[in-house]
Length: 617
Image 1 (cartoon, rainbow, N blue to C red):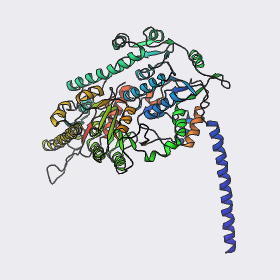
Image 2: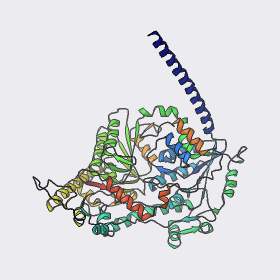
Image 3: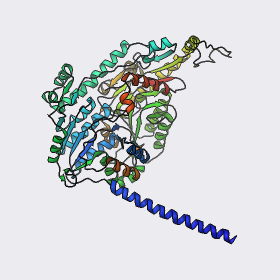
Image 4: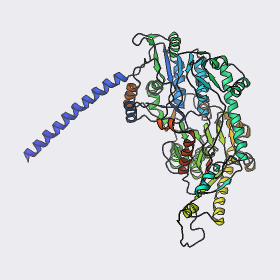
């Protein structure tokens, strides 16, 4: 027995010593890596903002494993920045004596709900405030999209590659229609809706756009495009009419033509851009180029680490900023979705926390499940009924279910370009009976009651079944009207007149009473503090939040980006997966339509959602 314990103690000692040595070695390796990946901002530096990231409303989460995999395979690292992280970085840079200018290049990633017009308008305002502090913004573009150009047009000096092109073609919404294909292959879609303009199901039952959908979409596009033209005209010192004439007569402007049209200040190769930036900064002796710092690392590492004390207090901050970005679905939802259970639980916990004095709900959603929308809307109402204000900040989309969860706010902010309204509901019930019969498959059975097979794919709904489903849809629509009526302090009849499933721009939404004020996220946060009688710098807790920088993510990001003195010439191409680049637009539209079918998981089959496949580019 003594030998047993002796051997046990020896083994434990060996394990302990070995573990201690391995731990020490690991700490040494981490320290060496950290030193190599350490981020520094040199004096008199240019902040290099390669736009090869997804600008989203909702913060991402650092995952060093994913970053390490991406760096090894040559993929992207830290390719998501939230709108607030972008705004905070630009604001901090405007006050940072080490930074003299911001250099914009590359192309924004358009993926899901990223790089929407709502967030771009907010980002533009931040860059304008940076310029107002006497600092410079320089942009160099090769083949910018209209969204790249909208953001970069605020630059003091806008440069275009001699063989690059500015593309300003206007806006268009083009949808895919599967009605003829469904008829050909024997798939039947049975629809029920409430709202004359509720066109979300037309993709599956029609071969073209309805007159009502053409009417509302045309008005909406002209509203949004009008605001884009105003912004471009202000930045380029032209009138909106002059910009519109350029768009209508040419649309695509190669380097010299862009300069001649006043859309760019000069053409330049990268070495010429580099020479300009060297005049705005100190010269780095080691790299023999201009002193610089990477924008993403500045936003994700420098600022959070400088604000450690503020971050430590965030768990008890009086202002709660909750993000609702994505399609609204039942349950907890997947990444990129808004789960009715999960988001309502988040708001409920904030409501039960007395240290929270005001709720700001940032909405960027086309809607989805009517039931899940009501789950979330109920918690918003209860928060407001607790005697504390609720401020909604609408991003690119806050329509249908996205408006449902917003309607009970104390104050609603929207960008002029926000897509909102769409107060209406629809249901979609597919039937595979004819498809099965055409292939020799039939169905038969017995049932206790006439409606026992309601909702099954094996048969087309009977008249009685359709009446039941239409009744549920009408009930949800009336409930939608009532909650908007109460929240907006109007009669049901007044709301019904502007509802009917019709979409509105933020500017038009203000005119008809669906929106209270025009402004971005920062304006909404300022109003929230004011309504709650809080100081202008009252702390904010975000749900979800990126949190403090993950040390391993910082190290891997630093190694992936390499030296900060790389002259910023490494991100001119848009970051898209290879499959996306190879996939034709029509195929992507079809994939998205089928993906949305998979998201329609409401047990009542009733949805409050924008038209399927909606996107503005």
